[in-house]
Every structure is written in C-alpha cells, then in structure tokens.
Length: 93
Image (cartoon, rainbow, N blue to C red; front, top):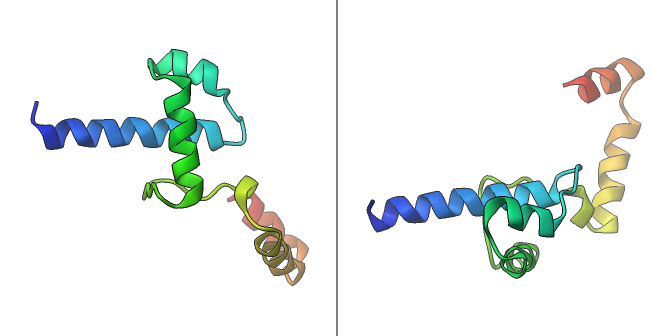
C-alpha cells in the first residue's frame, strides 16, 4: 500500500470518527476510541483541531453545537418567513 493510499484511508477514518462524535447521537469518545482502536486523547486532539480550524475535513458539515449565537439567530430568522407547508417540506427533506 502506497503512502498516499494510506493517508487517504487515515483521513477517511479521521473524518468518520469526528462525524460520529459531533453527530446528534453524540457517541462517546471513549467508546468510539475502543471501537476504532484509536486513543481517546487522539480523538480529543482531532476535535480540538477541527474546532479551531486547524484541521479541515471537507466531508464534515458543521455541527449546530458549535454555531455562535449569531449564527443560530440567523438560521432561526430564516425559518420565520416560511409558510407551514414550506417548513414541513424542508424538515422532511
């Protein structure tokens, strides 16, 4: 296996791990570390780097958990102008 191929697999695993921790299900770092064979401190470091912007993972969608109060307010204001049927359609999508 070439270095670039290994790096791709590693980045994929890193992305998958961070997604699981930041998902609404909020899987615990300890259980995820055991499941994936990764040190829990390594996962914490990835999260810290991700939150600070040092680690850029293109496949990650930002978690509302880390939105600023201004971002949350802007999102809520965007929904205020929607009709009930538009909101229903959006939420079911």
